[in-house]
Amino acid sequence: MVNARSVVASLLVPAVSMAAALPLEEGTVGISIVGGTTATIGEFPYIVSLTDGSTFCGGVLINANTVLTAGHCAGMRQSSLRVRAGSANRSSGGTQVGVSSITIHPSYSEGSNGVPYNDIAVYRLSTSIPESSTIKYATLPTQGSDPATGSSVTVAGWGLTSENGSGVVSALRKVTVSVISRATCRSQYGTSLITDAMWCASVPGGGKDACGGDSGGPIIDASTGVLQGVVSWGNGCARAEYAGVYTRVGNFIDWINANKA
Image (cartoon, rainbow, N blue to C red; front, side, top):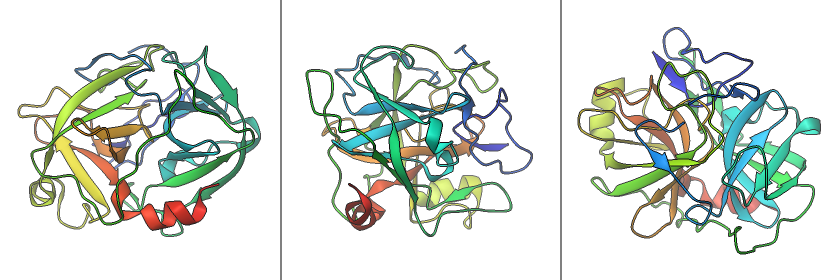
């Protein structure tokens, strides 16, 4: 079953049919990134954790006042929302600030099958987060850019380490996968589900992927470090026959620049 990569309210439920990404319950602790290894904050100094006390997503710091995340994560309660930067631990250390506004892409929608389209949002922070030894801003791609088929990309997050896992982990994790062509991804999911605003990545035989609780987090070009996507959705996690699906950040650069703080 297709599920987006966040988890909500103590449930990690691949919704029936094509499920939307569900934010992960904050109090649920267990296993992250499928097939991955522990990461340091120095490897991903722009990654942030987002929680409103009951749900959890990842995000990407793009300047002192702006976080980029998945549109399906934007249902969090703004008044309770906290952004933690500069720490590989999702619930301690680093710098924690609030959110002053949430802007979801105007064309964001969730299909009847639960698939999130134009799955991107911008959070403006209530307090600036300056760069430091553990905090840096992500490098964005140019408008219209697309990750090359066959290129290696690395995704990071605190989400589940297996499709049926019980919750997020405390320590940041990462895994490297390969970009597959949109045509191949459409052959897996169906032409109508994979738009040009998405791209897909996997490894032969499965076993490596983002999963529930990783939604909104970064996936970068493994060679250049450029942010190519944010975690969006997939059919289960790390299945051999289904790639992970990511929001194509290069498709939205003009919109990001117009809406960032």
